[in-house]
Length: 217
Length: 217
DNA sequence: CGCTAGAGGGACTCGAGAGTCCTTTCCTTC
DNA sequence: GAAGGAAAGGACTCTCGAGTCCCTCTAGCG
Image 1: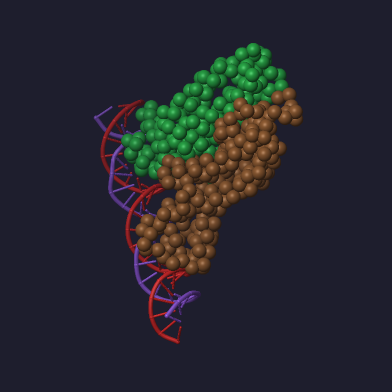
Image 2 (image 1 turned 45 degrees about the vertical axis):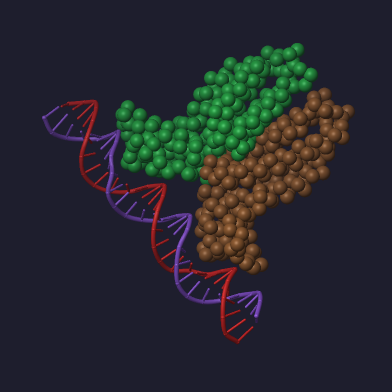
């Protein structure tokens, strides 16, 4: 997610605190609207109204809608990664994974499974219409998966996880279960499928535990 | 997916073979366009052109775009279910599941993971904007999952699967892995994550096998 | 204090896409 | 073979949303 590459590094506009605040208000408003309605169903007028700004401000900060969308992708990715980093950076036991699962399931239950994962939905909506957005989302997924696999690697190193466990594949499988769970929960407007999917993935990881706490299966 | 419920059963229009053929051409064209571009990014003019019809025909057969979208949802659901029924109705062994997995992975590999699952993408795009479409998709997912869980039930009954295996939950988990795999593969434009996700789910199911063929894990 | 540039307001243009309507052609039926 | 309704063509309208423009306001700085 390399930082902005303002085409000509020569001509740069000064930007005030106030300007930054407005820009953030716009991105935040767009983020929320696009989360509940989807990207394509969100109009710039919606964003303008929700952010209490004007059309000129929108175009002052973003060349066009696509650029705003990309800013939202970046913003949302940063939010998710911040949250996940906090939850996963110290992951070193199976119970830590269970806590992580519980937090995600609870949060999704609050909205009855609706809306799904902010990143996953955008990935589906944008993958076929904006290469740049797709690659940003891809990077975010990779970073997220790495947080998990790093934790699993730590568990393997500490001996909690068997040597023949493959942390990278387990992390990919867990992420897929999470995303698929979000999708099914969204379609069902019920968090259950997501919980079941995550539980399956966790059970599978559990089968690689070396602990005595490991049950018969 | 209850059949059409033409509001007033009194006033029904006669419809000729030719009319039916045109309607199908429209739905099929819309289906393909919406698969690659997404629902919202497909215009009626695109559909008109691709189906070699005229605007009046579109509105002759569908009250509005939403109705066309619903017809596409139904159509796509029927196609998937037909395909999956053929593949899963006789499922009775683990190797059958592996063959099923291989077919899906191979098909998705042909398009380098792009576009994802026709049903999953629609579910995400439509769940928050068309209740009726959402519930049709939900029913299709349920039917699909049932095909899998029926197969697992048969395996349990025949003794291939342990008694403490829960076919319904396993089916949900497998479906989530599939959908999540499609999503990640789409974002990555690479089928690998999908293969890994399905393999994880299959490994988990394998751990419930009673066979001697069951490996150490 | 006044100049300047960024911040902000909001009316306006323009095009695209949804949806309408009228006319013509094609089938079917008596 | 005439009538009538379905099928088809395609021009037209109308709305909505993206993007432009120009003017005003504010704040920092000499």
